Length: 334
Image 1 (spheres, rainbow, N blue to C red):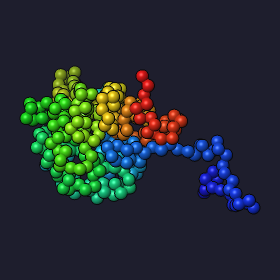
Image 2: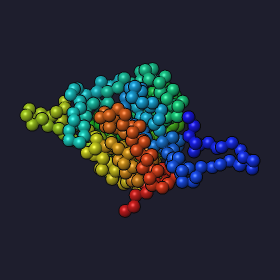
Image 3: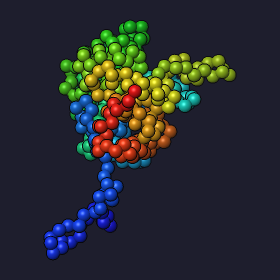
Image 4: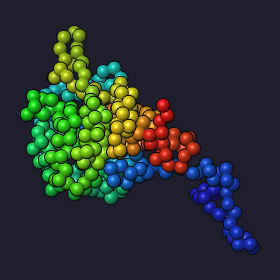
């Protein structure tokens, strides 16, 4: 049935069209939710955090994934990684802690298994961001080169620079400005696709500037924060490893602060990640300077979280009296 506010009556003798009252027409107006991130036109700013969303198809039984502006697939290395021993995850206060170790089948197997689905998803207008991982600069290069060879459907590549650098005693690759920039410099000439860097939650402003100078096209922040979970009855770690990554609502406000720091420090577009459970959580990131927002832990709590958050975010934008969400990016007032 057609909505009467969307139709006109038949032409009168004066050949005019009766228009709906202005106040009712305004109720139909929806804000423009489209954004441009790292050169990618996205129909809305809701993305998914790598490692919390599989490869997208796992969520199709719950909703049409193509409603999202983008998805970021689980990180892949050039060759398969086994990951860390179990147990790998545990629930903690207002968060989860994980030490999965980036288990993955390798880029080529990823493409063979999920390429058809992701290609179809891209045709529907959802941007596909793939993630490259490595323990050395050579491994990052090999991963990006494999993506270039086997993954034509990817719109952009995210570099996870929080992997431990095996040649530097296990320190995170992105833990210093030179280390993070070095990864971008190593792979920049290997691809013409946008390079997005998923930052470690350290020294944000200085590392953001270094990544901008090295040729990054966008930043994702933050990655999980190192923490520990001890079983007080056994006096052992609740995971197979003592130190693991904390993510979820407990780190949300820390992540918002870091996005704001990056927004002030550089001109690169930002993707805010960290404990987004509601549309208002996403809105905080937008106001702090993020162009995209990634839903992560919420996917594990409720598999329909991402479209709900999108709907809530759209309602918030409409409540702000603006025509486009882009008017609210970085609109935080000190």
